[in-house]
Length: 364
Image 1 (tube, rainbow, N blue to C red):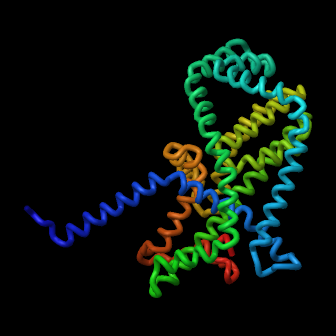
Image 2 (image 1 turned 90 degrees about the horizontal axis):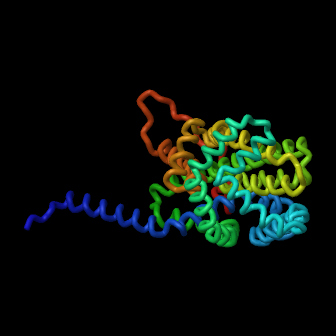
């Protein structure tokens, strides 16, 4: 029996440990994704908490009460917004429930091409081409709708779990980050890891800022388009479109369904609005979003598009959402630990403008 030498055994053990870590990550991928979204949600709420803490007359040194204040304010605003948005919807609930499945069937069967052709003045030949295209891809459309229906329960569960976990990150996340750093480092490399954590913190802040900018642009575009087409509650529906911009794919589809349904019920120019939404989606996905993400995260727009496409192919909706911050994270780590080329000057980093002392994480 041949016994491997010490170096070979060490390499094999490293490979086995790496494979075991990948297996654990794969098995626990759902939990990891939920925690990742909880951290991003905490970054989204953190500016509100810091604002309340800065302007509060009481408990300025405590974050917990201000976290609860922020959540209470969000709940109140969401309730008022829902009341204003769904006032007309509640009156026509039965009609909406009967309209949506019919609209879905028209899209998957290609029948909607006839309606589009008659409203947009298409020639019969063009309407036939659109209908034939939809009929050829009917299985893909039905498959996508089926996946959305299956993912709906998990998404609804995540909507409750993610904000709850975010409370812990907002309230005591700084201590958690410090404990993790002390657990995996020594006195020699602790400073380097703390600096890396600060840079990753700034990067995630910029990512959330980019998402807020994109949501604001969607709000302005949709509100203006619906106002020009004389949609009722154009501002409210525009706010909904801006909020749903945070959710990739499903978000804009949901917004389009709400806007289209509102247009159908109020006899507005809903087909023109859906056409404008399609144009906006193309501009957003292939020009605006990559440029905004590239500017905020200091990555090339083409790299942002590539990351989104690869993330969608590998992880679906979750992959689309997490692909860009993952690429930015890898870029930060590479720039920090990769040796610079000979004769090259060291470029700046996200941490060039450090946060105030004590704000090295979302929970500061």
